[in-house]
Length: 144
Length: 495
Image (cartoon, rainbow over all chains, first blue to last red; front, side, top):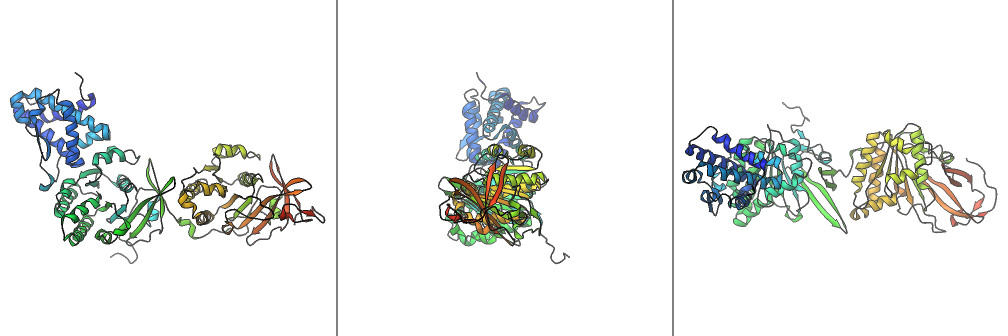
């Protein structure tokens, strides 16, 4: 099986995830931590590139990763407002933290790679990992 | 209390070469600026260049993107410019997408989001790209939108200024939309345009409006390179008064010629050297440069018809090695790439070299090449362009020698093909005549503004060491016919 992402992107994704749930063995806490990471990354990207831009990126990343990580189909909720991965905690309960963590790491790494190919790897980490505090208003679309 | 006459408004350096001069000193701090123009005119690049030049982590820039060019694509292409420093994103330059708010069709939501982002980041600069897409949507959505739009623009301007933000609204407007409320509210309006003429395009910038400043009027050439935009101000500041150096004459380096000119070229003059092909115009000009170099001066040669290497090979007519002089920083040979230049770009190039070397002599070789090097749209204004070029150069105190090729059509006696003698102080005409079955080169000093000069035709030779003036042809009649007749003594010597 060929990884759909680069080693550098994988390291970035792994760091984002492990920093959030470092030291925790509790699947519930790990699930919550992974949800926070994804929410932060998607929020940062939505803020910078817009909902449409984000949805285009995540669609591309999912298409590349999902065949190797079918668990992602349980995480994913799509509606008119775009693609949302807001069932991390529940999916951890059903499939276990390692499977969800591996899937999310692969997805984030692929997202980093896709975006790197478009705007350069040097900018991507700054965009996805910037301060997540966004003053978006209620009219700005569904929150992640 | 602020003393009378002291400006409260601080200038901000735009970071765009040439723009500050056009704006009368720079951008006004906390101003509300409209950047208008057609697609592809360089609006986004201009504003991002300003932001990257000025934004800091303490006073970052927020670049709001709205409906229009997708943000990812915009960043993808903008980062190709050298001013786009990725490490400044997002600490100093932040991209925020406003599409959701704009699409909601609610002015208040747009304003609320901008306010929230500004309150959080405390930016020094804000851009909304494209502002036009916000107001277009609102206009179509609401029948009472014109008044509401005006109110929205006014609130936005008021808020941004109150937050001590210098702001830029970017929009694709046409000249017929000048009644739009944003034009009234904006403190400055910069209009970018791109015109195509045959196989050449030219970009221009015009400051339509700027409050409290005396901007440089007219259309200014803009060029976009890998470094971003560069503006070439139409009227250089130095043009306003001419530096005169009364009494000082520069030796031409052509043996015998100074005597015909009353002692040389008056410093600060513009000399036109005109004649048909092969009469040695480039040689005369090269001798003028060599003479200056040998006297310790610095010089600039602008060549249009050949590469500098070819020019240097042809200019080996004296003991002064031009290549060595270039290496020593005493001489610049500037090749101005042909076919798509504006006079402002040429002037900037030549002026920069003159300032860099502190040059006192400039050669433009040749005017024919200069005209061809201009983009077609500027050729129509060739005489005006030349007038401005010469004015700007003499204003910084240099002495200019220009060459121009004319076609000998006997018995006509033409000074120039381009009818440019009005911009010159001095004119030397070269031509061929037939004397005793031999083609002889002759010249005459036909104009020396405010100075005595020899009225005769003089023969001259082109030797391996350059041109040398020979004898007066005073005994000949009908020289201008090309076939003079000897009726008396010749070789009377110089007067």
